[in-house]
Structure formats: structure tokens, C-alpha cells
Image (cartoon, rainbow, N blue to C red; front, side):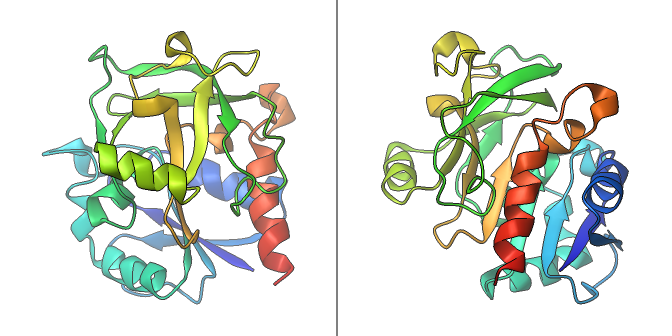
Length: 231
């Protein structure tokens, strides 16, 4: 399996992602440039975190029109696997590949700290190998991470098993106090109805190395790799 990690002007987690995929997980992974229109035969595309185009206008709004995104959108609509983390999640919502929007944090402050998330389902590529009763300690770093969708949209997310993660406390309790940014229903990540497009605000790639004393994020990548290499 071959991963492609897109770099936009302002991306700052692309090299972290490539390091984890290649050095920690032993995967074939290549860097894709935002001006390219060639996905280089990749089986799985990742839109990393950062501040694409300086987050001008609105986070992800300009990156959505990058040349490579034309190919990513086609790829996803044909069933290709795509994941967006933080800014990548914002971009996927801007393209319409994922429903809803990421708004300014309730506090109107940039938040950079560890938080806990709990898988809401095991029926996804990212969470099939994860423990749905375990709170995972995963870093966040964003100013616009407040997930919002209208009432009907939230109903559909729940009915279609599209919610991937909820923010929770260290005991795994999903409470208002454990919500770092005001996200609706404590939502930290979602997938599309088909399950081939995934997005999350926390950074699992920043929790995959013993040097950082945190490997909680590795299970989500291992789940993707384990699921797709079986196909």
C-alpha cells in the first residue's frame, strides 16, 4: 500500500506524518505537492495539519482550490481513501467531501495541548482495531476546531455511524468540561457515509513515538494499514 501526504503552503505536519508512516510504521509513503495533479498511484491520501495558505479567508477555503485537490476529490468520489487531520479536516469540509464545518473555538483562543478522545464506533478504517471504551491521549493544536452541523445533519451522522471520535475526560466520560473547543456533541472526528473519507481535529501523528512518551495515536494508523492490507 502506498500513502501520499499533501504539502500545501503553510502545512507544518506533513513531515511528521511522513516520519510516522515510513520510520515508525514501515510504510511506502511519498510527499505530494499542492500544485501537482498526479497522485503518483497512491492508495491512501492524507491532508496534514498546519495553516494552508495562512488560513486566510477561512481555514481550508483556499487550499480547497489547489490543483491537487481536483484529483483528491475525484479520487475520493471514486472510492479512494482520504484522511484529513486538523487543517486537513477543515479542507475536507470545505470541499464537501465531509459534512459540516469547523468554526472558531468557543474561547476564541488557539488551543495547543493534550486532550482525550474516545472512539465512537469500530465500524471505520481508523477505529476497527481501537478500544471503544478507552480514552486516548492525543494532542490538539487549532483555533478553528469547533465542529458544527445542523440538526438534521447531526441526526444523519448518528444514524449512519459517521461519528468517529468524541472528546472525553481521562476516565472516558464524554462531558461538556472535556470539550476543548465547543464542538457540537463533543465531536472530534467523522467519516462520510461510504467510510472512505475521514477527518479529525486531534493529531494522532504526534502520539506515535516512544521518544514523546506517547504512542496512543499509533493504533489508528495500524487499524488503517491492517484493514487495507487485508483487501
